[in-house]
Amino acid sequence: MDLKVGQVTEEMVSRFHELNQLSKAIDAELSELKTKFNAHFDSVLGQSEKGEIRYGNYKLQRQIRKSESFHNNKTVQKLEELNLQDCIITTKQPDKQKIEAALTLGLIPYGELDECVQRKITPVIVVKETPTVK
Image (cartoon, rainbow, N blue to C red):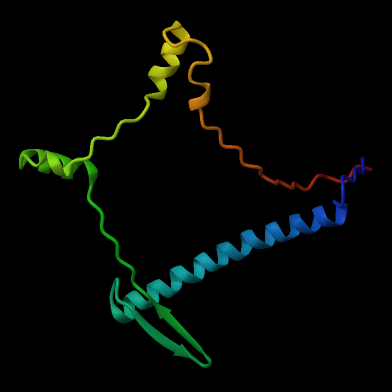
């Protein structure tokens, strides 16, 4: 069955499939190379150390980016022990399970929360190679 919708051709779908397979192979190889480069920098410079090494016309660099954040539960507990509630944010958010239960039990009228529902729709293109029919 050769369906053509708009400007889409079998060649375009085939090329998409080929490029997608290449992309996966490239991503895997890049990941492997990054792992090897990091292991090399670890052995030469030490873990988490920035540096650079020249190879002919290429310069291989490792940058170290650091970020810090507070562990939510531990920090809240410590702030409560120190009686510093002003440093704690109380976040109100809907409880999906309880809302669904209340809807099922009729405690919330049907449709009452329709304007509150956020729907996310994400189109995903998938091309799979199928065996040739003889």
